[in-house]
Image 1: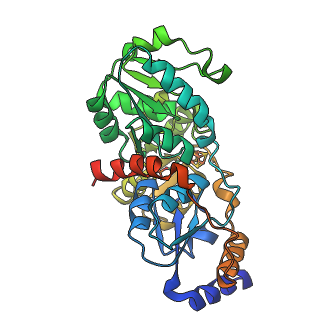
Image 2: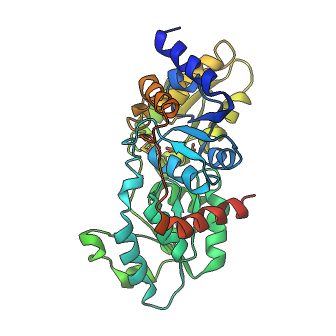
Image 3: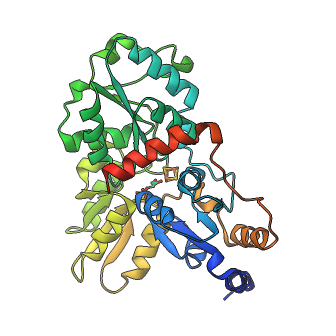
Amino acid sequence: MTSLTSSIQAMRQELGSRVTIVGHHYQDDAVIQHTDLRGDSLELARKVAAVASEHVVFCGVYFMAESAALLARPGQKIHLPEPSAECSMALMSPAPIVEEVMLRLGESGRKIVPLAYVNSTLEVKAVVGKYNGSVCTSANARKMLEWAFSKGDAVLFLPDKNLGANTANLLGIPELERYTLDIRGQGARLDVGAANKARLLLWPGHCSIHTRFTLRQVERLRGEYPGASIVVHPECTPALVAAADAAGSTSFIIRYVAEQPQGATVIIGTEVNLVERLAAEHKGRVKVLPLVESACTHMAQTTEERLSATLQAILAGSDAFVVNAQEELRDNARGALETMLQVCA
Ligand code: 13P
Ligand code: SF4
């Protein structure tokens, strides 16, 4: 055990039940070993809402801590060990452009329901809430997309065009009924006429960690490991999901590996920390390999050093790492998030 690890343990002991440390599955093992709760985005949103401790340290990226701050109890503080750990996909749909696009799409009189992947900023969640839309995660995108279609004439899915298209495939929505928006020029280039013909409007965002996986890698590994199964995250491209045996959230992938029989080989297309953890956990029972090693540098910004600094700040009574949900955005953003929690209760 390193001295950093033991000093984190000592601080945790001192803080006792005043602090809960939660972590997303993409965190490094060095950080994960300190967590009380782990999960995919949906599980963490639910679990954090039920946590009663005064302080929650969120080992993940900014939008996750921000969502936790929205659901926090009065007086409860949500800390993010590295406040600059932003999910790059979440930054691909700036709120002013989303608002502009919603206004222009609404001019036709059609009711457009915005559905934001939880990997989005608080500002975007507030715009979505204002237009009576909601939020989804990779674990409930199918159910939430069905919900959104039941509430209006068309759905604007943002920011991940791949999760949107993969979910549309599950619902059997034909390609002809989908349209990927051109948001260049702050939305000025939007072809409203073309958008008006579609039922599913996709924002052109993506996750650069999951779009590193290619069909060529699938072909190569299928050749090297005949009989292996391939499971990927739905942020991968639709072509990749079609070439895989299964696709789902990080927790789905964990369950998928756990359900494999002795001697199976599973190739995984998601963030490498999770793949390596699964390989270690199932060593000798199931062979687990990455499709290719793809690391999320945003998740990697949270380290034991940052966690230690956060616990020191809490002990010193400092709010240096606290993430707050801006008051003026709170009601709309919280409404969007709570709709998801109610629909998927
Ligand atoms: P999950 O909700 O599947 O854990 O995914 C979160 C994420 O950021 C994937 O890139
Ligand atoms: Fe964001 Fe992709 Fe990293 Fe997930 S893996 S946090 S979507 S950049």
